[in-house]
Length: 191
Image 1 (spheres, rainbow, N blue to C red):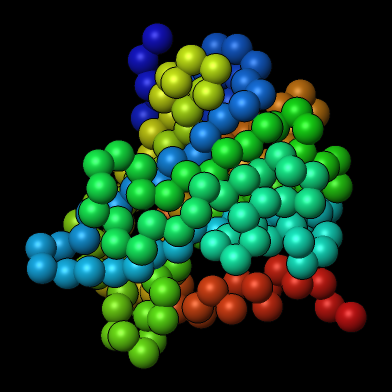
Image 2 (tube, one colour):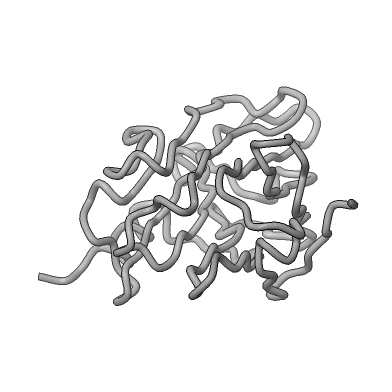
């Protein structure tokens, strides 16, 4: 079985991509910094409810909150230099047991302190997101971000959307300059 290479906006059901129902997966995110550069990129997951908002602050999984309240989404920690082989940051998911209030997961990669350090995604040569089946370590899906994000300081890599019988992976590749706090503000419910 070959890895499915996906394109921006072309969603695929995980069970179709894997040719079986998936339960425990790893979302691997990676990037290469241009020669001579150094960036601290951070992966974050926004676990959204039916209304497109966080059900609570604890459903924002990132370097200061490494686990969702149900324990089914776990961030493996911050890689501050991103120069290792393989995935630079990893998020583990146990799909069948993610809280039923969660309808969508949004995967954002942001540059730490980008504005003050004058860093942006134009400093990257490559970036990707991939899905691995943890039971057999098989790479199910792979999406290379082929866009040039120039002066963007964060990128939405992909979304996982809950469906009646599983999850759909949608590679998005949207860049922005709103900062990680901008995403927090976007997904926090209004009082």
